[in-house]
Amino acid sequence: MGAIKKFLGSYGENFALALLLWPVVSLMLTLPILAYLYHRDGRLRFGSFVGTYLTVLYAIGIVCFTLYPLPSGDRGLGITYGVPPNYNPLAFIGDIQKDGLKAVFQLLFNVVFFMPLGFIAGRLLRLRFPTAVLLGAAVSALIEVAQLTGLFGLYPFAYRCGDVDDLVTNTLGAATGWLCAWLLARVVPPGKLADAEPTDRPGFVRRCVALWIDLVIVWLAAVVPYGIVALGMEFAGFGAPVLPGFTASQVANFAITGCGVAALVIVEVVVPWCHDGSTPGGSFVRMTCEMHPRTFWCRVLFYLARSATLVAVCYWFPEAALILLIFYAIKREMPYDLIP
Image 1 (cartoon, rainbow, N blue to C red):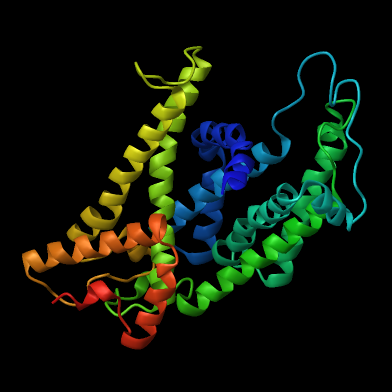
Image 2 (image 1 turned 180 degrees about the vertical axis):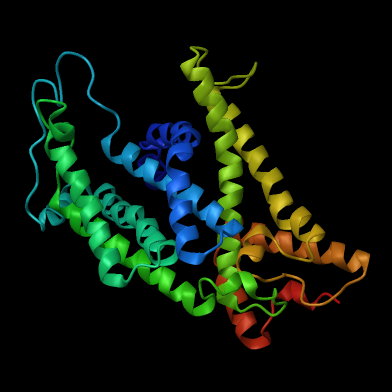
């Protein structure tokens, strides 16, 4: 787990820059995408707005993660010398032997990094599998060429490694993302969902999709506010936020944890309580987590049990997900659904 945190920590500045640019770039890119969706469907749904806005964030993230930071100073990578490219598609084997887990994480990250692109191509844009794969390969190739040519000649030397392994793993990620969108479409067909009535008997896959959407919202609500404040203070020259008696890292942990807990309560308790059992993710897949009406105190007990189960599975005991799956396969409901 420590190796994973260290690997992801090296990309923190890139993600922070993407968040900073997100509101500005969204104003320029969101409208054309929405116009295309309106032309295709004849109307715009709330999910289209959310999906488009997140797509713009992802596009910014691709640029920031692959091309930032830019070279600076009067010598160094991209200024007085470059990084040699890798044209050997099997070079990753030697990298794994040399760097171990770090190289494995890099390969997996390259796959996961392009899965959203494939998912967007399949779900939002509704492209066919070959087209989605070609799109993933084209975007990856464009990035590798930019890295290989010093951002298309802006710098005299390459400041990032143009790597054919990245092209292969990125394309694999796009293909995997499209397959995820295809599997979701088998459960929730695109275009038909908005007209369907919410179901109080959702299947396990639909429950998982709703939970995944909810957790993404919780994660964004936990990270984005602190990231915006911290970046604003950094650019203003005040440094990272600190409190008397606490380090900057401790303050960040407190702030992110506090925002995360508040967001979790709002998303998983307050919103469904006020909307007949539908969380934001549940509304997206047209389901309610309440399978039947309950009295006030039984409803309170239901939400306490459900929240405790989610927290335990997501943060403390992820192995319990297998137990829940077996329970659902037998009873066709979750343990907290048994509350009268």
